[in-house]
Amino acid sequence: MTKLQSNKTESFSRYEFKFLLSKKKADQIENEIKNFMVLDINADKKKSKKYFVRSLYFDTPDYANFYEKVDGIKLRKKFRIRSYTNKEDGKSNLFLEMKGRKNQKTYKLRTKILQEHLNFFSNQKSLFQLFKYYSRENKVINDFVFETLRKKIEPKIVVDYNRRPYINKFGLLFRLTFDTELKSSTGQNIFDNDNNFNFKEFASGKTILELKFERSIQPWFHRIIQNYNLMRLSISKFALGMEKNGFGSETSN
Image 1: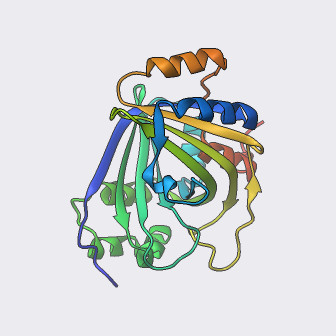
Image 2: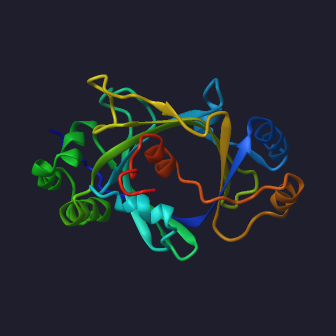
Image 3: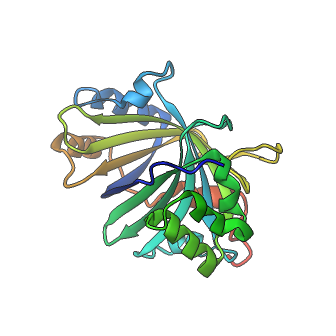
């Protein structure tokens, strides 16, 4: 197996606001923002002007991460493996991500991982094999191993969607993403090598609009919020996907 030459960890800290939109309203807003924003290069080069996102989320046997989100716990974190393809080709980028919330901001740390190492993340017996291929100084890998040993986190749900992302024309970190065609399935691996996935749509016909920024909302977007009467919601694709597949129902009424 290959040892990853670079063990860099990327980190992000920003405000994230989410809105649930009808297709009509999403189309109208997308048309308006083009005066101020441009397509992210990763989407612009594609014919559809959007790209595919797949995430494999981990949770504890008693769904602690799910309930922390549902209950609105301010200090929380979760782990996921993220891919931008649904095919195991041995070369596409994969990332292990640790995402959480601290005070009002969302933070994310991620590190690149290799497809050939995927089984180490879903099999606790081979967990320490990760340190053969990744540095012990890699915070994301270290924290993942610690959480797996402490809380017994394991793969629970796979979430797919298509994303059309826009970035600010004028350089400031101000990003808008339009996520559609959302679906989820139970799964132990991010790739369905055994044809076990059974995807179910959620938020059908809707668009999840995500706004991400470091300091403040741009004045022109304040006008859009007012003109379209946008209501900020606490939406989680992870939680919606879990609910759609019946997770957490054992203890919910």
